[in-house]
Length: 197
Image 1 (cartoon, rainbow, N blue to C red):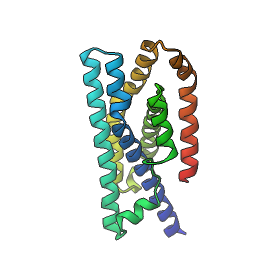
Image 2: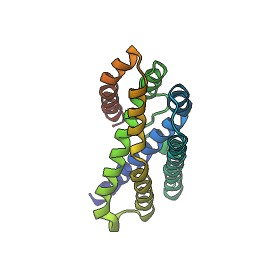
Image 3: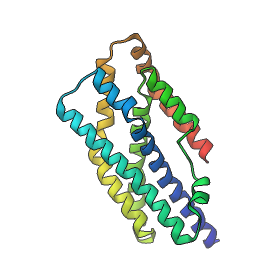
Image 4: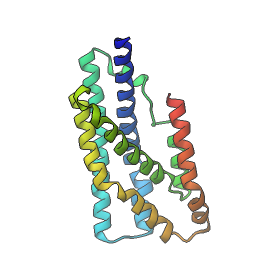
C-alpha cells in the first residue's frame, strides 16, 4: 500500500543516514590510530597533513549532520530517539569495528579501504537521489547534497593515504596487508551490510 511504501522508503533513508553517520564517527574515533600514528611513522609535507586535518574535520561534521537529522526525524514523528536508533545499523562495538581496529593495531590499512568504499557509495547514492528530488524530504535531500559536495572534494584523500602508507612502509607485514586489506575491507562491508539488514 502507499503507506507501507512510504514507511519502507523512510526506513531505508534512515538506514543510509545512520550508516554514513556511524562510519564517519568510527573514522574520527580511530583518528589517532590510523592517521596520527601513521604520519608520525611516515612523515608527510605540511600541506598533505593540513589536507588530512580538513578531511577529518569534514568527516566529523558529516557524522554530526546525519545524527542530527535522525534526532529531528524522531522528534517530528513522535518516535523516541533511542527506539529509532535501536532498529538502525550500528558500527560502534560491532565485529566490523573490532576487526578494523585490530587490523590497524597490527599495521594494516583496511579502515582506509572501507572509508574509500563508503565514500564512493555516498557519491553514488546522491546521484541516484537527484531524479527524485521533488518527491523527497527537502531536508534529507539537502544534507545529501551538501555531503556529496564535500565528499567529491575530499574523496581522493583516503586513496592518497593508502598509497602513501603502502609505499613508505617497507615491513614484511605491510607486504601481506598490501595483498589482503582491500579483500578484508570488502568482506567486512558485505558481512556488516547483511547483518544490519
